[in-house]
Image (spheres, helix red, strand yellow):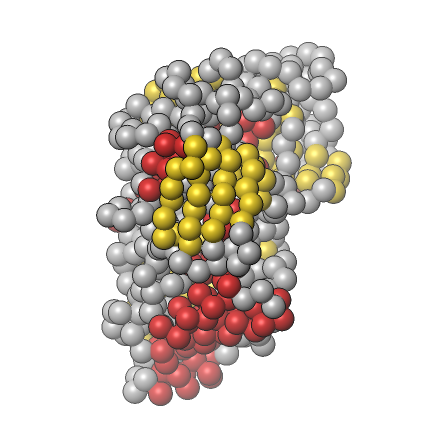
Length: 525
């Protein structure tokens, strides 16, 4: 759905350098050309402070709030990272590094952990951070809560204060990945007893100035941010632009400085423009067509298998992604993970799809598939290609184009068959726990297998790496062969920025530098 509600923002002048196309750590100079109406100014040699960073983003809705428990898409996550800090950060090498928890150690068996709270940090209301704030912020996601990571934290038996600057976390069973789990973007830190989500208080580099959900959010830099070498810009304006073409045009006309979810078809057009840098990041992001395993006809595994064989994955990658992605095999762990299960690739096979329909006592099948580019760029086009491929197996896929605004509230986990996506996670356990365990809050295919749950829980405490791989391999095989998540492809993150935005890089989990771009980049010119 096109969203033309964003305001016209005046472009600032800057001199243009060589456009960079980033693929991981590699940089290739591409093309030539200038954005219209820009005056020349000299670049500084290093990071500089000042200016307003203007983000044009997909992934926002009029239903967004800045309550960490409810975060489901990138605009509220990105804005939250401007205002709040997390407990642990995942760095560019996919390692868990200190944030508000500055150090940690575990006892043998990894069931008891001591975490030290960073000293000298203040919230935007002047309060000094202490252990009580950390405990409160963790407990927001435990017990009676609607948090999306309640099930992920279910293994925490107790969070206790040791001193004002130290806490102890006790698990029901050992888990060496606990620091990675505590990096989840829901675990933003707020003052103890804080509940006023319309007026958020955090320890981040920025404070909220205005919040028009689904339209425009403005934050302003605050004094005394504790992170050295972060939060360079004076203000961040985040404009929600759901339509991919409109988002690209906003960048080209100078209305915004950075956009996410770049249409792969736009890359050729941008190659000749020195004013734009395109960043390609191959991470764990994957597209999903979700089948509700509790709703007919998707409660029959043979129907699920028929639909999985009825999709031409390679054609979607070639046509929709223009090659900026790789084949998926109906489980969420990417090839870059050491625990990836290298199962025989499920290929497009109308005959096998028809075979499974017959096993389900069906000669044909008609299903409604809800899609929106809110799910992933090109989701509607992917649905149309799926429709054509499935027809050869006697499957009618009725593509329902849904509005981008409200998609995550009104369609996701409500429509029995719909498009979705997941960003990568730093560990296999985190990915499986948040979306596939029977009691996971975000078990969006409603697939439940107690034997699968036991595999995941056993893998957490398995110290023998070979045995752990076997457990994860079997878990992925169960998802692929039985689950309701059809994962046709892993999608490269594609984003673009004006060349006066400096310090842009990639991240192993999410786009826009792990959604922390606001505190990492600076503006020149």
